[in-house]
Amino acid sequence: MNASMTFYPSFVKKELKKMPRQLRAEFEHRYGNEKRQVVTAYMLHIFCFGMATYAYRGKWLWQIAYWLVWALPFVYWYHGDYTDGWGFSKSIIGGLFLMGPPLFWFSGIFVMLFAGVRQDNAQLANRILDEVANNTEPLHWKIPYDPLHLRPENLSKNYLVDFELKTWQVTRVIQQDWEDNTSSRLLSLHSEGENRLLLIRHHKKETRYFVGESVDVRQLDRRVDFQNSPRQVLSYHGKQFYGEDSREGVSFVMEEKRTPQRLHYWDYFDKSGEEGITIARLSDKEILAYHWHKADEMDFTEILPVKN
Image (cartoon, rainbow, N blue to C red; front, top):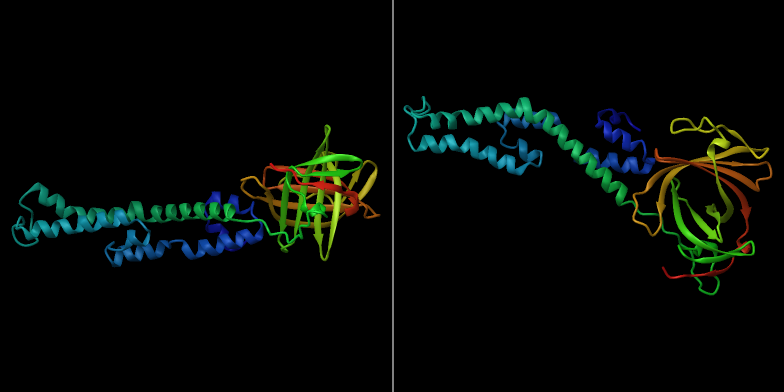
């Protein structure tokens, strides 16, 4: 995160910390191009007498009102209400018209301008944050679809698949897109009161499959939280697991309209490489843990599409 973070509103700093680097970069690029500068607004207000200040801020109704306030004294003067050109007004109304422009101008300096530009930028930042988060799309999986030979990668919500002599139904599909433009999918499977997780990862030119279940992260590392990373070596059921990989990305719940979440993963494997542990931190909301065993594509059979 660059030094410009210090100039963001506090709520923006908090939200940016939840975003992976590519989304932060997109936000910073857009915000840098669209934000208003306080110095520019001041210069327009002082040297142009405010004739373009509100237009610069995008406040066109205020700008039109400002022009009208400045125009009223000229109209009043033109109709001869002033004694000697720009002398004292003959009426209270004329005096009010005469005092309107300088009062409006001074209020712009001492009240609206400085706070107004900062408020404009805060609203702009909030809008860009929403657009960056909501317009982010999951990476497209280029998977061949053959109805006669469906693969685990073809599984979607409500599909049926046979595994370990049972028929399982897919209840949820989560896609995890990483900063290196790779992707994985986490599928929740349910069968007769049992639950399993199927993790499908694209690694270089091969696809890896892991089957596992959720575990209590406190059984693995009691000190892990939203600020501290887990230890390099974890113990589970008397076996040691060693940290091999850490990555950041974005998590999407497929087929559901939800805002993507920032995701940070830590992967651990035992010495054989056949069994693993994953700790996942989702934004600042959840810390999850999974225990895995490697699987083979041939372990999943009789994949059947089911309409929602």
